[in-house]
Image 1 (cartoon, rainbow, N blue to C red):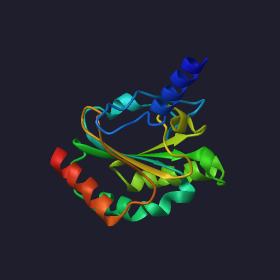
Image 2: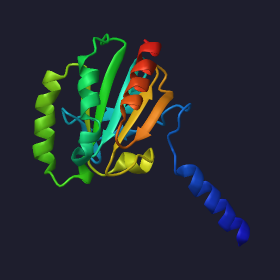
Image 3: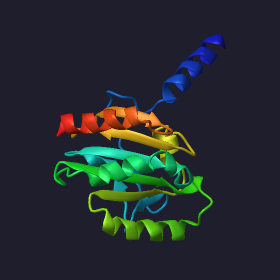
Length: 171
């Protein structure tokens, strides 16, 4: 009985951080049942391969902690063929109606040419990737989807500089 409890405890502690710096991002699909892209089509994480990405997994109510950084990212002249931002919105974490939020962000998508908006309707990535719920999560991925940086919560100026340095080093 003790061995089963120890094994279960070890397995649970390993699963607390399903995405870790230095590892390749596990594949997921957000589709009509659990989300999708801004055009209501399935989104596959495997499509992140081939470019450097900043992946933001955000509760819309907690976006203030990363908004200045998003503005900074959008002002950078990074080549579209080499870099992109993916903002995955945790729709299940907000009081805002999904249709209203999706409509607003779909319009914003037209302004932000190098940013893709994706929607998680069921907290699927909270479960699959162990993203922190009700928070902003930031990952930086290389061209092979290897995680180079990870942080949940408010980004400091030091965090922002580190992320920009990583992006520029990868490009």
